[in-house]
Image 1: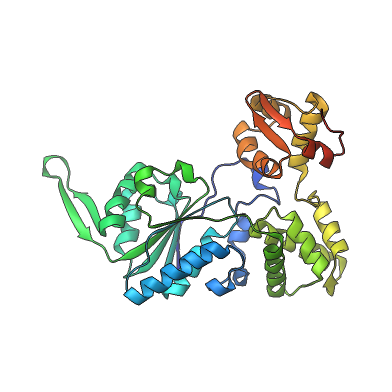
Image 2: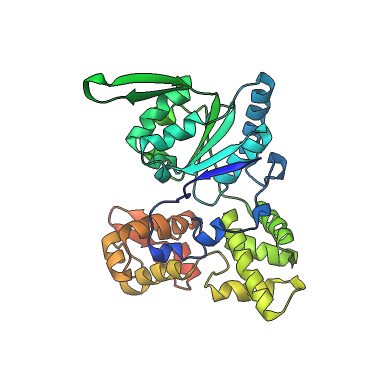
Length: 351
């Protein structure tokens, strides 16, 4: 399967501090240029986890092949790092077609998306990452393309301007987004399959770590792979990233044999990732609320000023995992540390 890329995949705006976190689900520059392509599964039966999603897509793919038609347009949404891009590549492989990969920020001008659509071959797959960031003009060009396989373009200027319609080859658009709610209703309604990727369970994550370690030439004990799986926030991309950090320490320590949980703990402790996946930014956030405000409630602007961070970064990068764990609550009066969060940092429960 050929993968044709146009522009960089972008996971959305965040501060440089957020991007440097080892437990951030966004794609790093190191991972974009990584030569370890084998970490991505090629077929659905190699794809670990997301059982319900795989079942739905497997039926849709087989039905499309049986009919000799293009697969219905697919929208995949969910937090970064769960495998949306990988699933698009797997779908192309299952369909036996090429996959053209791009991102919404790379399609700023109308001619960018026109060029992509006109050059698509029959039943080819077009993947657009962070599709909710498409410009209004790009969206309007997509509407007839998705619904009627037609591209409406203006030719000429002023009084001589004409609307021309070009027929397009049947194709499949796979859109990926981390913010499904930001997608406009007209665009969302044109997808035949809309599926959410869920966070991964511990067993699936352990299998992913073991599989990746094989491609990296590493041998991990079960306890070691379990330790990485417990610290990766339910996200395969973070699991692979933590595994790379463990590999680095293993090479420096000269331990090229079996990697055990003690080496994993040593490596991840260097990056301040604790046993449930919290890093220094998470603990700094919780400690501020506990030590300065007795656990809250505290307003977002006050927290941002005290931490020296942007409020949007705190709300979109730091808080989601703490909310998922039940360590904090967002109330009308501000952020509050729950008894679970207090217990994790060794603070007594708040009555």
